[in-house]
Amino acid sequence: MIFGNKILDYWDDILRDLGTLVAIPSVCGPADGKYPYGKEPARALDTALALARSYGLETQNVDYYAGHAQYGEGDENAIVMAHLDVVPAGEGWDTDPFQMVEKDGLLFGRGVSDNKGPAIIALHCLRALKEAGIKGNRKLRVVFGSGEEIGMDDMTHYFAKEQHPTMGFTPDGRYGICHCEKGLLRFQVSGEASPIISHFEAGTVVNAVPYKASALLQCTSQDTDLLRQKISSIPAFSLEERPEGLFILSQGKAAHASSPENGVNAAANLIELLYSVFDTRLGSFFTWIHDAIGLTYDGSLYGVSCADEVSGPLTFNLGLVHADAEGANFTVDIRYPATQKGSDIIAILRERTEKAGLLFHLLYNDEPLYLPKESSLIRLLSGAYEDITGMPCTLYSMGGGTYARQMFGKGVAFGASFPGFSSHAHDCNERASIENLKLHAQICLEAMYRMFISE
Image (cartoon, rainbow, N blue to C red; front, side):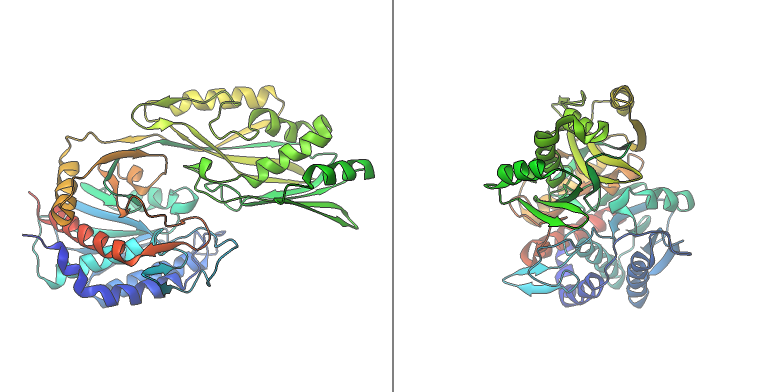
């Protein structure tokens, strides 16, 4: 029996509810009273749980870190994990990023693909199972997170209070099944202010390639002339003489930190330009960025490049840079191969940073995820995919960190995107194919149905 096709009966409701969620600019911010990520992510969670209750589902809000909708009973707990927080909209949109727009078979808006679209679809899959009266062998939950984009500590808090999963998946990758996720490591380096750069700003989140960087310089007219000469044929840079100093702007291209080679790092490019004029006059902090990072994205200059057959090479993203009169810091996002140990990479990073006279701060280290292809969950999800699509379900690894690594070795990333379609997630004009979303919805419901009733 193929149950997944029934989700198409709910398509109009799915689009309506998704539009409601996209309209909430649920970018994580500072804690605000009882809201750990600010009011907007909390509003998104309240909205999703209210929708779930309107469909007759049980709900639980775990201190606004996360919440869930539930159907069924039993000692075991199968879950689908999605997140309602989004990255900042950024610039360059052709439409309002917080108004869902349908055009030419596509949906546009921040979160339509990452990850509000899959979250709403999972909610309606749960609703479809309830309204069909399907009896299962365990609880089935759709878990809504509020802090996935800033490190996933929302799930640390959630699972400290809620039951751990028996099995599950997160629709926050692509099809087939991601059975291997690289380790995720983030660190920050801080140092003294620069005698030349009175202010430097680049990046909005560490897990994206910065698309814009700016610097305010205190320099001579000869330095200004040399900078003008160097950028004269490079449209990515622009100069403006201001009363407070020489302002320089660098334009790049955003990309996800797991694939920095797909972007153009505005911060790294600007620092390389400045170093070509000022050399070590930039000070130890910016000189170190030139020496240890440069324009690379594989960690080779920092001494940590590596690769394996299962998950590919280490990626290294200079995501945030800030400097002012008080000091300077940069933050890096690393995705390292599944066969490597984070502790070994951290040791090298710390030693090299401190040897350069700078301070090293480890922010986060999440070890890799790996489920063998013979596992029962892989077989179950593969069967759901193949029966809906008629195509074989492939296994792959990825550098992106998903909620799967929060499932205690019991879950994987499964959908929601398909190879060959670019959703522009973490970039302007984020989009989702309606045809693809409908196919994902059928696969998602079939997979949830099988998790629910399997012995």
